[in-house]
Length: 208
Image 1 (cartoon, rainbow, N blue to C red):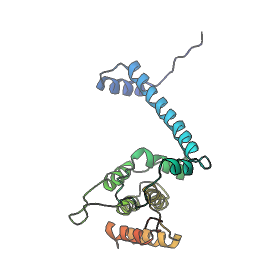
Image 2: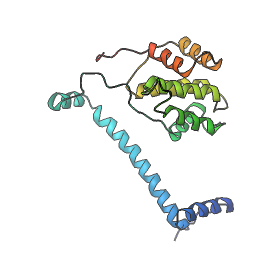
Image 3: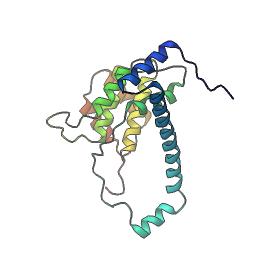
Image 4: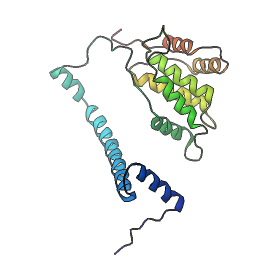
């Protein structure tokens, strides 16, 4: 019978044991649960791919909308409450830096995640939209520089992706993003100014 024993160093074993004890589990039980969680995440990734493939089959979405009703014609409210998390940010930085370089300051990513989730940034701003949240992410990343290199590019990518994922879109040349980044870095803008700049680049939709 093949030997299926997995050897780990003492420090790692002790860390597993401490976490398992804090959860009231044995190490074996904790590792089994951890494996199940990872298997579930892998299955969800496959399901995501299947979902995308299904809804993008030629003519399917149009036919379902025709026969059962589609998206409303009025514009979706600005506040979508889309929240990114640390895992998503870490995935994007790996795409940007590869596996050779890693995050220099995780606390900067934690700060970016926490700030863009605030629902009342000021007494005058009680319903922040996608542009304010994107500006908050961009400002934190630009100023706190979480990566050893390319933090500015990372901030741009995260902000642009957030806006698009929130159902909005912007149309701006590289020079516009560069100037916005430089103004943030030089502390010439508040997060509200940054949000206004992003809104000025908004691409109108058919519902407008």
